[in-house]
Image (cartoon, rainbow, N blue to C red; front, side, top):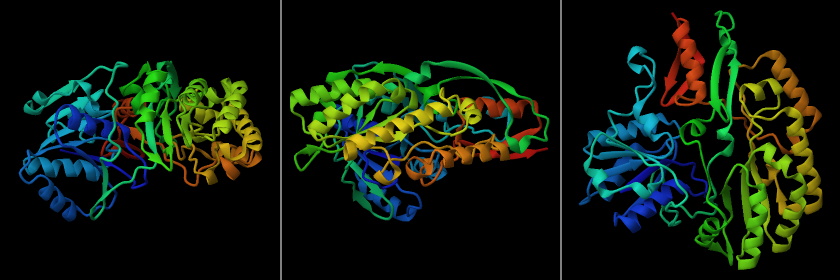
Length: 438
């Protein structure tokens, strides 16, 4: 089997897909590889490779981590037409399979992938059974728990543009948190319409969300707790090594700071040689544990380990936009966080990495539906005053993406249902910047 995914060709692994491939191989005796499809790939060359790979094999193909790409959806459809059984897995698998609510009543809404997907599987791979391959048009929703299969064959990842190339994974992932703890925070707020509709007399609308309002994973997966130290250590031991040390890895946990101290103590006790731990985390976790960071970084320095804040979820530098995005932080807290990291950088040097020129890529969502001249002017002023452009601001911002199954998708559909306006869909995304009025 092949599991096709979106990939940028950078040397990083894809934990979920590679765990699934390893499970199929080791537990179900189904030879499986993961193939990351780059953008602008050669379709002719890809189909030639697929024909060769599946010669004499059962035509079962899986997809995950589509990243909203329309070309990957078209690839699923073409393989379905060629007689393949198609499987969709990973986050949003069931919601992408089913499509948007009331899609039959709105021509523009995403109809889902039911017509081209035979089996939609969501949750940990442990519950997958060979019998599922005999059940077309089936939805399987496996519940999460902490006793999940996490063995990874880090050599099973390939990328494809014009030819198949094996990817030498230089950045792995290690799971601690199943979902984001902030997704437990239920919030209700009133959102104004997109600025582009300011002349359409659209009122503020009540929207409910758990966690960040734009996060499709918080709505889909939620939070199911942390795995704990022993399971994290087992994953680390299974990582590849380079020159006697484990390759750098991302610790999957949006609130990792306190756990990081315990992890380093265990690493020291077990004499595990690490090079670098990457953190993708929230501002409030850094600020809350500011007093502990010095000790944590001192221990990392003693062990010769770099701690990289690879991506901090700032998302905006304007209080109004932070409120609309339900980030649970304000600009003053962002300023506090950045000043803290700058001070610690002066003390720990290259054992603490967080700057853009050190490889970090922090969250910065721009444009958003609510941008106006005043908001952008104030935000640019604060970016300049606090010199975020020197070390924090990414080279490119990320436009706000509204996945059809996110809380913002609910907001857009409310607008559509009460006014004669519709928004274009592109794959699984809703183009909030592209409304049509009748």
